[in-house]
Amino acid sequence: MYRSIVVCLCSYFLFACQSDFNNSLDDTIRTNNNAYPSVDQELWTYFQLFETEAAQRGFEIDLNKFDLLAEIHEIDQEDVAGTCTYSSDNPNEITIDESFWNSASQKYKEIVVFHELGHCVLGRDHNNNANSSGICLSLMNSGLTGCAIEYTGSNKSIYLDELFYQN
Image 1: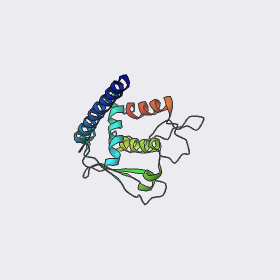
Image 2: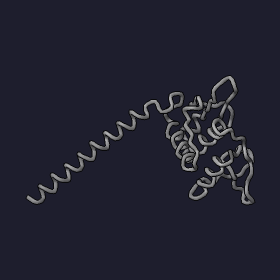
Image 3: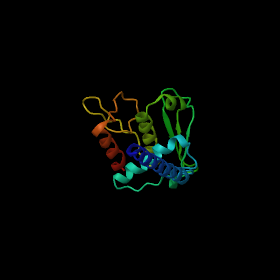
Image 4: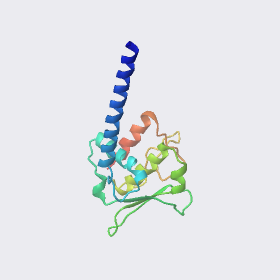
C-alpha cells in the first residue's frame, strides 16, 4: 500500500512538472517566435547571449533596433568564418560561413558571431594586439596575426569586458 502511494505521488509530480515545463517551453517559443525576424534562427541564441552579456556590463542593447540582416551562407573567401557588411544605404549584414558553422563548436560560433556583432553593432575595428605569450587581447582580432584566442574560464570575461567597454 505504501509503495502504491509513493508511486502515485511520484507520477503526479513527474507529470505535473512535465506539464509546467512544456507550458513554459511553449511560452518561450511563442515569445521568441519572431525574436530577430531578419536573422537565421540558428543565430538567435548567440544574439540573445550578446544582449545578455552587454546587460551584465551595464549596456542595454536591443539588436532588433539595428536593422540587422544575418544569415548562415557559404563565404567564397578562404579562411573567412564571418563578415559584417555595412553602408549608410544598407542595413548591417552579417554572414557566417556555412562550412564553418557546420563544423564549429559552440564556443567558436559564439566568438565569430560576437566578433561580427562587434563590427556591425558596436562599431569596433580590428584589434590585433597580443600579449608576450601570443594570446590575442581582443575578440576583435583579425585572425591574420597568428595569436590565439583563449576564450575559456576567466579569460572569457576579460574578452567580453574588452569587447563592450572599448566603445
